[in-house]
Image (cartoon, rainbow, N blue to C red; front, side, top):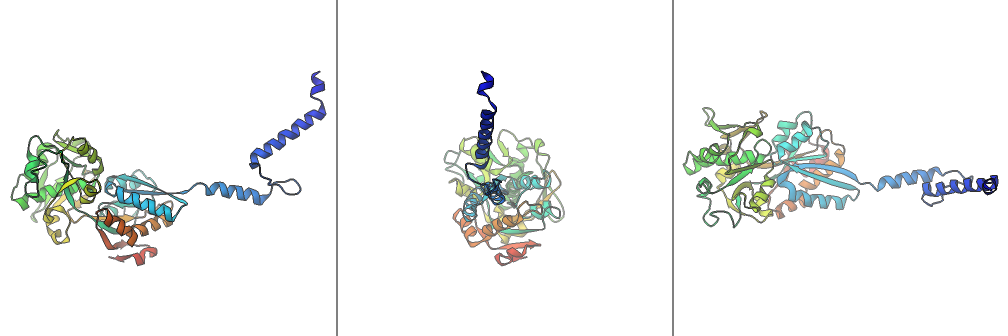
Length: 368
Protein backbone atom coordinates (compact mmCIF):
# COMPACT_ATOMS: atom_id res chain seq x y z
CA UNK A 1 0.00 0.00 0.00
CA UNK A 2 2.74 2.47 0.96
CA UNK A 3 4.64 1.90 -2.24
CA UNK A 4 1.44 2.62 -4.20
CA UNK A 5 0.79 5.99 -2.48
CA UNK A 6 4.35 7.24 -2.85
CA UNK A 7 4.93 6.16 -6.40
CA UNK A 8 7.78 7.83 -8.31
CA UNK A 9 5.29 9.94 -10.23
CA UNK A 10 3.64 11.27 -7.06
CA UNK A 11 7.01 11.85 -5.39
CA UNK A 12 8.06 13.90 -8.40
CA UNK A 13 4.95 16.08 -8.07
CA UNK A 14 5.52 16.55 -4.33
CA UNK A 15 9.12 17.57 -4.96
CA UNK A 16 8.03 20.04 -7.64
CA UNK A 17 5.41 21.60 -5.34
CA UNK A 18 7.98 21.93 -2.55
CA UNK A 19 10.40 23.76 -4.85
CA UNK A 20 7.65 26.12 -6.03
CA UNK A 21 6.53 26.84 -2.46
CA UNK A 22 10.08 27.71 -1.41
CA UNK A 23 10.38 30.00 -4.43
CA UNK A 24 7.21 31.87 -3.43
CA UNK A 25 8.44 32.31 0.14
CA UNK A 26 11.89 33.57 -0.91
CA UNK A 27 10.61 35.96 -3.56
CA UNK A 28 7.66 37.30 -1.64
CA UNK A 29 5.03 36.07 -4.17
CA UNK A 30 6.55 38.32 -6.87
CA UNK A 31 7.63 36.98 -10.24
CA UNK A 32 11.36 37.73 -10.28
CA UNK A 33 12.40 35.23 -12.94
CA UNK A 34 13.80 35.56 -16.43
CA UNK A 35 12.22 33.73 -19.39
CA UNK A 36 14.61 30.84 -18.84
CA UNK A 37 13.40 30.38 -15.28
CA UNK A 38 16.47 31.91 -13.56
CA UNK A 39 16.29 34.74 -11.02
CA UNK A 40 16.58 38.27 -12.38
CA UNK A 41 19.72 40.14 -11.17
CA UNK A 42 17.81 43.43 -11.33
CA UNK A 43 15.05 42.07 -9.12
CA UNK A 44 17.56 40.82 -6.53
CA UNK A 45 19.35 44.19 -6.46
CA UNK A 46 16.00 45.95 -6.14
CA UNK A 47 14.96 43.74 -3.23
CA UNK A 48 18.25 44.37 -1.42
CA UNK A 49 17.93 48.11 -2.02
CA UNK A 50 14.35 48.25 -0.77
CA UNK A 51 15.16 46.32 2.41
CA UNK A 52 18.06 48.69 3.15
CA UNK A 53 15.94 51.80 2.59
CA UNK A 54 13.55 50.73 5.34
CA UNK A 55 16.23 51.22 8.02
CA UNK A 56 16.88 54.93 8.79
CA UNK A 57 20.46 56.08 9.20
CA UNK A 58 21.26 56.75 12.85
CA UNK A 59 22.67 60.12 13.92
CA UNK A 60 24.03 60.08 17.48
CA UNK A 61 23.98 63.40 19.35
CA UNK A 62 25.57 63.55 22.82
CA UNK A 63 24.68 66.74 24.68
CA UNK A 64 24.59 68.57 27.99
CA UNK A 65 21.55 67.89 30.14
CA UNK A 66 20.48 71.53 30.00
CA UNK A 67 20.06 71.18 26.23
CA UNK A 68 17.48 68.39 26.55
CA UNK A 69 14.41 70.47 25.69
CA UNK A 70 15.83 72.54 22.80
CA UNK A 71 17.60 69.52 21.30
CA UNK A 72 14.37 67.51 21.38
CA UNK A 73 12.83 70.25 19.25
CA UNK A 74 15.89 70.36 16.98
CA UNK A 75 15.66 66.58 16.58
CA UNK A 76 12.06 66.92 15.45
CA UNK A 77 12.90 69.64 12.92
CA UNK A 78 15.96 67.79 11.60
CA UNK A 79 14.09 64.53 11.08
CA UNK A 80 11.34 66.39 9.21
CA UNK A 81 14.00 67.76 6.85
CA UNK A 82 15.78 64.38 6.60
CA UNK A 83 13.14 61.59 6.82
CA UNK A 84 15.81 58.92 6.29
CA UNK A 85 17.69 59.98 9.43
CA UNK A 86 16.92 58.81 12.98
CA UNK A 87 18.41 61.34 15.42
CA UNK A 88 19.24 59.74 18.76
CA UNK A 89 19.93 62.31 21.48
CA UNK A 90 21.62 61.33 24.73
CA UNK A 91 21.93 63.73 27.68
CA UNK A 92 24.47 63.80 30.52
CA UNK A 93 26.65 66.28 32.34
CA UNK A 94 28.97 67.91 29.81
CA UNK A 95 32.21 66.50 31.21
CA UNK A 96 30.64 63.06 31.42
CA UNK A 97 29.29 63.47 27.87
CA UNK A 98 32.75 64.18 26.50
CA UNK A 99 34.28 61.30 28.46
CA UNK A 100 31.89 58.95 26.65
CA UNK A 101 33.86 59.78 23.50
CA UNK A 102 37.37 60.20 24.90
CA UNK A 103 37.42 57.45 27.54
CA UNK A 104 34.60 55.03 26.70
CA UNK A 105 35.21 55.46 22.93
CA UNK A 106 31.51 55.79 22.16
CA UNK A 107 30.88 56.86 18.57
CA UNK A 108 29.02 60.15 18.22
CA UNK A 109 28.22 62.42 15.29
CA UNK A 110 27.71 65.56 17.39
CA UNK A 111 28.89 66.61 20.85
CA UNK A 112 27.40 69.69 22.55
CA UNK A 113 28.71 71.00 25.87
CA UNK A 114 27.37 73.57 28.33
CA UNK A 115 30.95 74.85 28.60
CA UNK A 116 32.61 75.37 25.23
CA UNK A 117 36.10 75.25 26.77
CA UNK A 118 35.69 71.54 27.62
CA UNK A 119 35.85 70.71 23.90
CA UNK A 120 39.41 71.96 23.33
CA UNK A 121 40.35 71.08 26.92
CA UNK A 122 39.21 67.45 26.78
CA UNK A 123 38.86 66.54 23.08
CA UNK A 124 41.79 68.27 21.36
CA UNK A 125 43.73 67.08 19.42
CA UNK A 126 42.72 63.41 19.13
CA UNK A 127 38.92 63.68 19.07
CA UNK A 128 38.19 67.20 17.77
CA UNK A 129 39.92 70.17 16.18
CA UNK A 130 37.17 72.79 16.05
CA UNK A 131 34.06 73.98 17.86
CA UNK A 132 31.37 76.64 17.61
CA UNK A 133 30.05 78.78 20.47
CA UNK A 134 26.30 78.94 19.92
CA UNK A 135 24.33 79.88 23.07
CA UNK A 136 24.56 81.59 26.46
CA UNK A 137 22.95 81.14 29.86
CA UNK A 138 23.11 82.21 33.50
CA UNK A 139 22.94 80.55 36.91
CA UNK A 140 19.80 81.04 39.00
CA UNK A 141 18.44 79.52 42.20
CA UNK A 142 15.26 77.59 41.38
CA UNK A 143 12.49 76.65 43.79
CA UNK A 144 8.77 75.89 43.99
CA UNK A 145 5.85 77.45 45.83
CA UNK A 146 6.18 74.58 48.33
CA UNK A 147 9.83 75.38 49.14
CA UNK A 148 10.51 76.54 52.68
CA UNK A 149 10.58 80.34 52.90
CA UNK A 150 9.48 80.67 49.28
CA UNK A 151 7.66 83.87 50.21
CA UNK A 152 10.81 85.40 51.74
CA UNK A 153 13.68 84.55 49.41
CA UNK A 154 15.11 87.17 47.04
CA UNK A 155 18.36 88.26 45.37
CA UNK A 156 19.57 89.91 48.58
CA UNK A 157 18.99 87.15 51.14
CA UNK A 158 19.10 83.82 49.27
CA UNK A 159 22.36 82.70 50.92
CA UNK A 160 20.89 83.45 54.36
CA UNK A 161 17.83 81.33 53.52
CA UNK A 162 20.06 78.43 52.42
CA UNK A 163 21.93 78.65 55.73
CA UNK A 164 18.81 77.85 57.74
CA UNK A 165 18.89 74.43 59.39
CA UNK A 166 15.60 73.21 57.93
CA UNK A 167 16.44 74.13 54.32
CA UNK A 168 17.86 71.60 51.84
CA UNK A 169 19.45 72.58 48.52
CA UNK A 170 21.35 70.98 45.68
CA UNK A 171 23.54 71.27 42.61
CA UNK A 172 25.02 68.87 40.07
CA UNK A 173 28.32 67.02 40.53
CA UNK A 174 31.18 69.45 39.78
CA UNK A 175 33.27 66.57 38.42
CA UNK A 176 30.62 65.64 35.86
CA UNK A 177 28.78 68.81 34.99
CA UNK A 178 29.58 72.49 34.33
CA UNK A 179 26.48 73.62 36.21
CA UNK A 180 27.97 71.94 39.28
CA UNK A 181 31.32 73.68 39.18
CA UNK A 182 29.67 76.94 38.15
CA UNK A 183 27.47 76.70 41.24
CA UNK A 184 30.66 76.61 43.34
CA UNK A 185 31.91 79.72 41.57
CA UNK A 186 28.63 81.57 42.17
CA UNK A 187 28.66 80.76 45.89
CA UNK A 188 32.29 81.85 46.27
CA UNK A 189 31.72 85.07 44.28
CA UNK A 190 28.80 85.84 46.59
CA UNK A 191 31.20 86.40 49.50
CA UNK A 192 32.75 89.54 48.01
CA UNK A 193 29.49 90.84 46.57
CA UNK A 194 27.53 90.58 49.84
CA UNK A 195 30.48 91.34 52.14
CA UNK A 196 30.16 88.00 53.94
CA UNK A 197 33.30 85.87 53.92
CA UNK A 198 31.59 82.78 55.36
CA UNK A 199 29.09 82.03 52.58
CA UNK A 200 31.09 79.22 50.95
CA UNK A 201 32.23 77.82 54.28
CA UNK A 202 28.70 77.70 55.71
CA UNK A 203 26.95 76.35 52.61
CA UNK A 204 29.53 73.99 51.09
CA UNK A 205 32.44 73.22 53.41
CA UNK A 206 30.13 72.58 56.38
CA UNK A 207 28.07 70.14 54.30
CA UNK A 208 30.66 68.26 52.23
CA UNK A 209 34.34 67.43 51.90
CA UNK A 210 34.87 70.16 49.31
CA UNK A 211 37.08 73.04 50.41
CA UNK A 212 37.88 76.37 48.74
CA UNK A 213 41.40 77.76 49.16
CA UNK A 214 42.80 81.21 48.56
CA UNK A 215 45.15 80.43 45.73
CA UNK A 216 47.74 83.04 44.81
CA UNK A 217 48.85 86.66 44.91
CA UNK A 218 46.37 87.51 42.14
CA UNK A 219 43.49 86.96 44.53
CA UNK A 220 42.25 83.73 42.95
CA UNK A 221 40.18 81.22 44.89
CA UNK A 222 40.76 77.58 43.95
CA UNK A 223 38.54 74.57 44.66
CA UNK A 224 40.37 71.25 44.42
CA UNK A 225 37.66 68.66 43.96
CA UNK A 226 37.98 65.22 45.53
CA UNK A 227 36.86 62.14 43.63
CA UNK A 228 33.08 62.09 43.32
CA UNK A 229 32.65 59.27 45.83
CA UNK A 230 34.62 61.32 48.38
CA UNK A 231 32.55 64.53 48.22
CA UNK A 232 30.32 63.15 51.00
CA UNK A 233 27.37 65.56 51.00
CA UNK A 234 25.44 65.94 54.24
CA UNK A 235 21.70 65.41 54.55
CA UNK A 236 21.25 69.12 53.84
CA UNK A 237 22.85 68.85 50.41
CA UNK A 238 21.73 66.90 47.31
CA UNK A 239 24.28 66.27 44.55
CA UNK A 240 23.41 64.47 41.31
CA UNK A 241 25.50 63.71 38.22
CA UNK A 242 23.40 65.91 35.94
CA UNK A 243 21.59 69.12 36.85
CA UNK A 244 18.37 67.85 35.23
CA UNK A 245 18.20 65.05 37.82
CA UNK A 246 17.61 67.62 40.55
CA UNK A 247 14.24 68.57 39.07
CA UNK A 248 12.74 65.37 40.48
CA UNK A 249 14.19 66.21 43.90
CA UNK A 250 12.48 69.59 43.87
CA UNK A 251 9.19 68.13 42.62
CA UNK A 252 9.26 65.52 45.41
CA UNK A 253 10.10 68.21 48.00
CA UNK A 254 13.34 66.39 48.83
CA UNK A 255 15.08 69.73 48.35
CA UNK A 256 13.83 73.30 48.59
CA UNK A 257 16.24 75.00 46.20
CA UNK A 258 18.82 74.09 43.58
CA UNK A 259 21.29 75.92 41.34
CA UNK A 260 20.39 75.62 37.68
CA UNK A 261 20.49 77.46 34.36
CA UNK A 262 17.82 80.07 33.85
CA UNK A 263 16.64 78.42 30.62
CA UNK A 264 15.99 75.10 32.39
CA UNK A 265 14.02 76.79 35.17
CA UNK A 266 11.87 78.57 32.58
CA UNK A 267 11.35 75.45 30.47
CA UNK A 268 10.02 73.62 33.54
CA UNK A 269 7.90 76.54 34.80
CA UNK A 270 9.87 76.81 38.03
CA UNK A 271 10.18 79.84 40.26
CA UNK A 272 13.71 81.19 40.54
CA UNK A 273 15.83 83.89 42.12
CA UNK A 274 17.65 85.88 39.46
CA UNK A 275 21.08 86.54 40.95
CA UNK A 276 23.14 89.72 40.43
CA UNK A 277 25.13 89.70 37.18
CA UNK A 278 28.37 90.14 39.07
CA UNK A 279 27.99 86.56 40.37
CA UNK A 280 25.63 84.75 37.94
CA UNK A 281 28.26 84.15 35.20
CA UNK A 282 26.12 85.76 32.51
CA UNK A 283 27.93 88.93 31.46
CA UNK A 284 31.20 89.60 29.64
CA UNK A 285 31.31 92.87 31.59
CA UNK A 286 32.30 90.87 34.69
CA UNK A 287 34.79 88.51 33.06
CA UNK A 288 37.63 89.78 35.27
CA UNK A 289 35.53 89.12 38.38
CA UNK A 290 34.44 85.65 37.31
CA UNK A 291 37.99 84.50 36.63
CA UNK A 292 38.96 85.02 40.28
CA UNK A 293 37.52 81.56 40.99
CA UNK A 294 38.94 78.32 39.61
CA UNK A 295 37.87 74.70 40.01
CA UNK A 296 40.32 71.83 39.63
CA UNK A 297 38.35 68.67 38.89
CA UNK A 298 39.41 65.31 40.29
CA UNK A 299 40.90 64.35 36.91
CA UNK A 300 43.15 67.44 36.97
CA UNK A 301 41.14 69.50 34.48
CA UNK A 302 41.27 73.19 35.49
CA UNK A 303 38.21 75.38 34.89
CA UNK A 304 38.38 79.15 35.30
CA UNK A 305 35.30 81.25 35.95
CA UNK A 306 33.89 82.91 32.84
CA UNK A 307 30.52 83.72 31.25
CA UNK A 308 28.33 80.69 30.49
CA UNK A 309 28.77 79.83 26.80
CA UNK A 310 27.82 76.55 25.09
CA UNK A 311 29.93 74.80 22.44
CA UNK A 312 29.30 72.18 19.76
CA UNK A 313 31.49 70.05 17.48
CA UNK A 314 31.57 67.00 15.23
CA UNK A 315 34.12 64.49 16.60
CA UNK A 316 36.92 63.35 14.33
CA UNK A 317 35.72 59.75 14.55
CA UNK A 318 32.05 60.51 13.84
CA UNK A 319 30.37 57.67 11.88
CA UNK A 320 28.35 60.21 9.84
CA UNK A 321 30.35 63.46 9.87
CA UNK A 322 28.43 64.95 6.94
CA UNK A 323 25.08 64.59 8.65
CA UNK A 324 26.65 65.67 11.94
CA UNK A 325 27.68 68.90 10.26
CA UNK A 326 24.15 69.33 8.91
CA UNK A 327 22.82 69.06 12.47
CA UNK A 328 25.30 71.71 13.64
CA UNK A 329 24.15 73.94 10.77
CA UNK A 330 20.58 73.66 12.03
CA UNK A 331 21.63 74.50 15.59
CA UNK A 332 23.37 77.72 14.54
CA UNK A 333 20.91 78.70 11.80
CA UNK A 334 18.25 81.38 12.26
CA UNK A 335 15.69 78.58 12.65
CA UNK A 336 17.75 76.92 15.37
CA UNK A 337 18.40 80.23 17.10
CA UNK A 338 14.68 80.94 17.21
CA UNK A 339 14.12 77.60 18.96
CA UNK A 340 16.57 78.62 21.68
CA UNK A 341 15.02 82.07 22.00
CA UNK A 342 11.52 80.60 22.33
CA UNK A 343 12.79 78.31 25.10
CA UNK A 344 14.39 81.07 27.14
CA UNK A 345 18.03 80.59 26.16
CA UNK A 346 19.85 83.42 24.35
CA UNK A 347 21.61 82.24 21.16
CA UNK A 348 24.93 83.69 20.03
CA UNK A 349 24.24 85.47 16.74
CA UNK A 350 26.16 84.64 14.67
CA UNK A 351 27.80 81.63 16.25
CA UNK A 352 31.56 81.89 16.81
CA UNK A 353 33.85 79.27 15.30
CA UNK A 354 37.30 78.32 16.59
CA UNK A 355 39.95 75.91 15.33
CA UNK A 356 39.85 74.15 11.96
CA UNK A 357 36.22 75.01 11.20
CA UNK A 358 34.85 72.95 8.25
CA UNK A 359 34.31 74.93 5.06
CA UNK A 360 30.64 74.04 5.05
CA UNK A 361 30.09 76.18 8.16
CA UNK A 362 31.95 79.25 6.94
CA UNK A 363 28.87 81.24 5.95
CA UNK A 364 26.96 80.29 9.12
CA UNK A 365 29.31 81.78 11.70
CA UNK A 366 32.09 84.23 12.41
CA UNK A 367 35.52 82.73 13.06
CA UNK A 368 37.55 83.68 16.09
